[in-house]
Each structure stands twice: as C-alpha cells, then as structure tokens.
Image 1 (tube, rainbow, N blue to C red):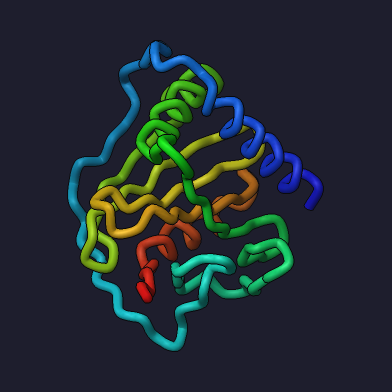
Image 2 (image 1 turned 180 degrees about the vertical axis):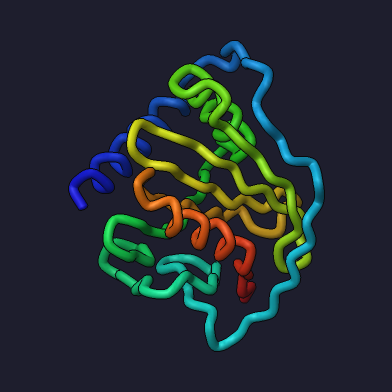
Length: 175
C-alpha cells in the first residue's frame, strides 16, 4: 500500500511540476498509437459503481471496493481514481508531457488506444513507471473533462488487463 501511495504522491508532484515546464520540450517519435476505433456501447446498469468524487461510473473487476476516504475504488494495491485538470492546463498537454517522460524512462512503453466509450470519442493511455503501470481514460471530444487513472503493480498483469477492459465500461452521469 505504501508503494501505491508513494507512486501517487510522485504522480501528483510530477503533474504539479509539469504545469511549470517549458512548452518547447522535445517530442520523441516511435511510440505506439492504436488508431483503430473500437466502439464500446455503455448504458448505466446496476453493476456500475461511482468513482468517488466524480460523475463517472465504471463496472470494476471483481473484488474492487469503494473507498470514499481516499476517493478510489481499490483492490489490494490496485485502484481506480478520478483526475481532472484545472485552468489552462489541458489533458492533451498533460499527456504530451507524460509521453515525453515515458520515452525518457521506458522507451516504447507509452501507448494510446482510441475508442468510443458511452458514445463519445476517448483514448486510453498506458504509462509505465519502475513498478507500476497506469492507464488513463480521457474523453477527447469534450464530453467531460474528468478522467480516470487505473493503477496497478507490474506483477499484477492479470488485474491490469481486467482494469483496462473495465475502463471501456465508463459512463458519465451529467446533471
């Protein structure tokens, strides 16, 4: 649990530090972008669980529980949590910077899959750190500016695959 907290803390520090970084950072080519557009139909069901503190719902893999205190859906060292950018810092800018960092740390590990979730254009980005893999689901058509981060330890790849598929079930309940 301490490892996940440490990784999340470092992620927050990185996101904060990234806000002040230069726009002239070098972009590295050669990362994988899956351009096939997979359509995933969603309708809110009784299996959908609300991501704490958000308007987003997901059908999580078995064993995940709602932890309102931490604002996450958790299972051991794996979790789903909400993320949102503020001000003029856009998700695209964040992902561009995260991609540059991924290329430095683990060349070729950054991936992007474009798909349709709940009838809206979205992307799932894969970001690898030294011990943790994170999937980011972001809607790319302005449907909602909320995103979901799915984090799991590299040793838990089966859970990671289940989490990846669960991201395709996300819907937003607009008020």
